[in-house]
Length: 324
Image: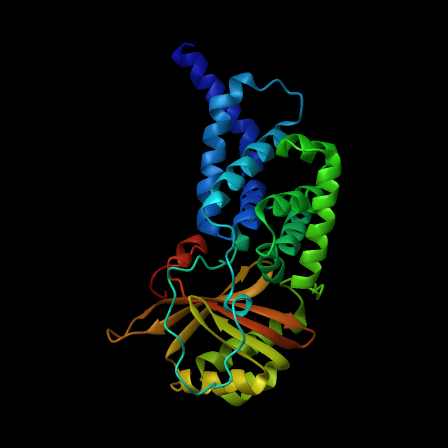
């Protein structure tokens, strides 16, 4: 192949495959539970697809072909480790909100949030992606073995036919249907509440999360507690300690949020849910990247607060290392 022909083939490949990049990223995130690994696997998918592009015969759509490559790459990656939990998925909550927390466990492969800024601009696709990347769903998927996870996502999220999934996984249609039923049962047990993804423009949501952010910055514990549901949960990977119940969450936060202005919060969206990039004031007087905070709402209350203490996530959320 001449250099000109190869260049044209590369241009055709990019033009035809680039529209699927963001949805493939969401798919890899659902499979892996990590935005960083998902980005790497999408890059690997496109490299593998480019190498095999000359042999693509069009027996399936280009989109389906790319999903097959991505799913196989994810399953291969999951051979090295199958589960990324949240602290609440490992052990029970702490009953001592004012006591010390357990040491960080950076060696654990924790679930990561998904930045909505990486989703497709198409509004319909964005709404669907938000629903199928919500944090509770992503955490529940981690309870499934990799092949069951793939079957459930391909069948229930992407609406593939059982025969297509069977061909991809080199198994039978009956085996796919059986795996799907087991996956649905296990997923329902891990994520029994079918919460809804509220649009960011919802006025009640906007007021609730705005009030929480202001109270957090002001170290206003009474207001924070007023905004929490009775069964609220607070967790902060990679710290394994977590708290359940409004009083316990408020008790813990009262030991951490003591100074008005020590934190600054900038809004974003993660997993189809309201979120904030949290910056903490350091000894140099500047605010440095501290955590990505994701809120789960239940009606007019905040039901779960997940603070991902992983400053490396700020890049994925297009947030600077220091507060602007």
